[in-house]
Each structure stands twice: as structure tokens, then as C-alpha cells.
Length: 189
Ligand code: ADP
Image (cartoon, rainbow, N blue to C red; front, side):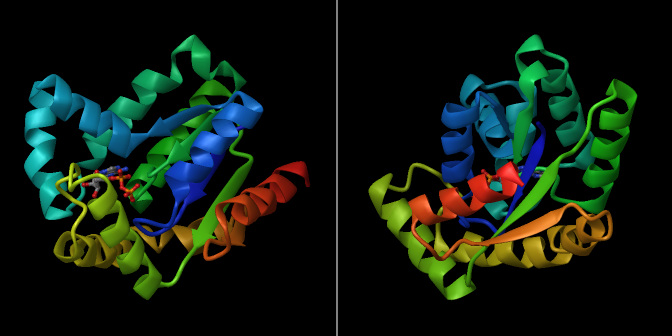
């Protein structure tokens, strides 16, 4: 089973993805985590990505698609993947479609975790406080930028996947458990 978890920055995709990894043995492919690992490791890619991420802009589609393709081909992904934070542009979604087609894979569900933006600010501020600001992109100013980038580049993927009959929406304002149950119900359908 292959799933896209979709939602604005701070919507709680990562939390739900980790839950599904434990309950279903899927592999979480988080492009944000991969980029942060590259920064941590001090690779050339990490160096290129850092300023872009700190600004709240998007890393180029080519880099992102290359990272995903490399991971998709590893045997651990054979049981299925949860895509978290990817795709973020129509070009990435087209690239993903081509990648799946070439490998004979099916995209089963696109699940949007829907939240209201005032609540997102509160969550980001809490996360920044809890992690001691360890993520350079966890502050109100960058969040504003990331939300603008989300509306401009990423929100068009909602009608894109709705048109393919794949989009389902859950209420991300509910508790973590309730959101998890709503996702489980979709996966069981
Ligand atoms: P969150 O889960 O908080 O919404 P991520 O950890 O997914 O955020 O992403 C952090 C940053 O990494 C983004 O703001 C962007 O700069 C970069 N990034 C992550 N995924 C992608 C992607 N698919 N395309 C382009 N840039 C990305």
C-alpha cells in the first residue's frame, strides 16, 4: 500500500506517518527528514538545501525527485511507503506518477490532514519551544513564508488528486488518536 499524507506545514503529517510505520510496517519517506539528514551529514546537497529551507522556500523538483527515486528502489520499500512532505508541487506529482508507472506501483490513497492556520501558528510555536528551536525553520516568520509557498505551489495538488478520485480529507484539529482513527478508517475502506 502506498499513501501520500498531505497537509500544510505543521498539520501533523509526520506524527501520523510514524504511527502508520508502527501499525502497518510501511516505510516513511519524508523529504524534509532526508534533507535535514543531508544537512547534518554535511553533504553538497545539504549545503545547497540549507539556505533554501531556512528561508521557507522549496528545494528544486529535480533534487527532490532524485532523492525519492533512490529510496523507492531500496528493497525495504517493497511493502509500501508513506510519502510525507512530498509531492509539494505539480511537477513533483507528475514525476511521482511516472516513477510509479515505470515500477508498476499503485498510489492507493492521498490523505489530506486539514487544519486551520491560526492553530498552525500555535503548534509551531509550541514545537519551537519544546525543541529549543533546533529546527531553523520553526519560527513564525518562516512559517508564514512556508504557508504562502504551500498555497501557491502545493494546494493545487488537492484538485489534482481529487480529479483522480484519490483524495480523502481528515480533520487535523482532532486529537492525535482521533486523526489516527480517521486515517485507519480510510485505509480499511
Ligand atoms: P513540515 O513537515 O514541517 O511541513 P518538512 O520537514 O516536510 O516540513 O520540510 C521542511 C523544508 O524542507 C521545506 O520548507 C522545504 O524547504 C524543504 N522540503 C521538504 N520537502 C520538500 C519537497 N518535497 N519539495 C521541496 N522542498 C522540500
